[in-house]
Length: 157
Image (tube, rainbow, N blue to C red; front, side):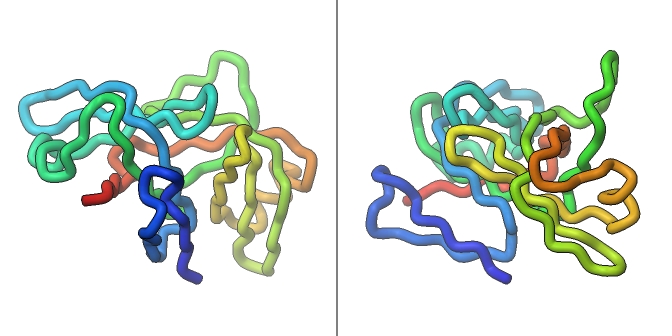
C-alpha cells in the first residue's frame, strides 16, 4: 500500500506518494559533511531528531540547509523493534522509543505501529514470532532502531 502525506504548511499544494510506509516531514537541524557523505539531522516532532546519511551531492541538489524542510522516507522493513535493554549499544544511529498503537498480524509477519509522540507514528514489519516474543501488543512500550543510511530524504522544489 502506498503512503500519502500532505507536506504541511510549507508545501500546501503538494502531496507525495511512495511505497515507503513511513514518511516523516520535519526541519533540518544540522548537516555534518564528510568526504563523500553528510549526516543530516531532521527534527520530526518536538523532541525527536532522526539522522539520515546522504551524499554531499544530494545535500546540494536537494538544497538542504539548517532551518529548511525535508521529508524522511523509511521502509517499514528497515526498522527493527527491540526491548528496552539498559546498556544496549547499537551501530544503528536512530533509536526511538514508542508505544504500540496497532498490530496487524499474520502467520508470517506483522505490522506494528508505534506512537512516537507529537502526533507521529512509525510502522515496522517484523516476523510474527518476534512480535509474540517481544509481546508487542497495543499499549506496550518498545524501541525502534534504523540506520541513518536507510533513510531517503525528499525536499520540495
